[in-house]
Image 1: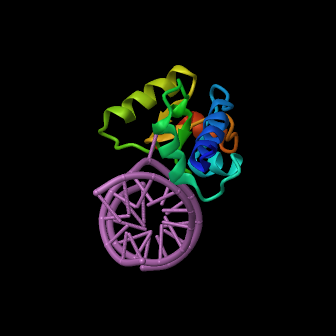
Image 2 (image 1 turned 90 degrees about the vertical axis):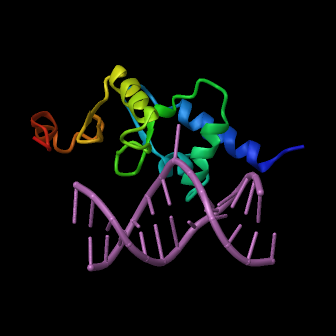
Length: 112
DNA sequence: CCCTTGACTATCT
DNA sequence: GAGATAGCCAAGG
């Protein structure tokens, strides 16, 4: 038996697992890279269903904000994990050198 | 089959 | 920048 759901989940886990340290991907990007565009919402489900040590903390929203409530425990956990991998959170947004567009602004701090 | 929900996204105000 | 709206797709009641 082959459930499409299983295939989908597996593809998502594999894509997420390919994300390197210090790098982040949005749900839409993960879904698209897995071959399922517009399945951003399904990505969240797939990761929740996964019992494997998936680097879910490297998956953020399209605007680089964390997907959880700012006052939630998961939010703080994700932020801690990201900072531990060299990723910093400024103004609630994930800052990665991969963006390299406004490095000056990043270094100086867009919020301050 | 209809309705609600969700770790989403893009656009408009 | 923040809130509201619409679009999107799948799972569960």
